[in-house]
Image (cartoon, rainbow, N blue to C red; front, side, top):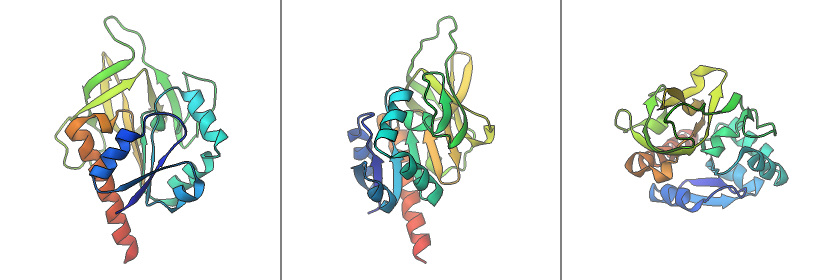
Length: 214
């Protein structure tokens, strides 16, 4: 069974993500130990809450380098919710610099009549990079569960892997670049489609392990 390091930096409930990964046939290891992150077959960066505390917690636990090293190593890496936003340069939500792995800014939804901010609930995903391994075996325009007031705005639009429309605003809902995928929605709360994505992630890890052993 592949081992997935789920990075623990005090930002979010990790239990439901781990359960989803374990149901898909992986061993989920909640950890803040750099060596365990390095040895894992894949890494998941979760996150719920605000941008500045998330970055501060990562820094105070010396987890910035292990996160960057994991992405640079080529192993499958999945960011979820705040774990997507902190990969960017900065956020309108705070003052701290982000990890700067994906060039761009995290922006707040603009107010418009009748629009609820935060964007909470089920919404349809438009897949802009349909070949991404995470999206396999999904129906067209799958419904996913969102809870956010901020969204990522990458400088290079080709990293956008899916978009979502809230009111009149169509924004990036997921990014993908090489081994790195990160999503704004919560797969672990997204019923069938979300669990399929976690299963796809586990399958991607297994296929990489097989390829590397030959």
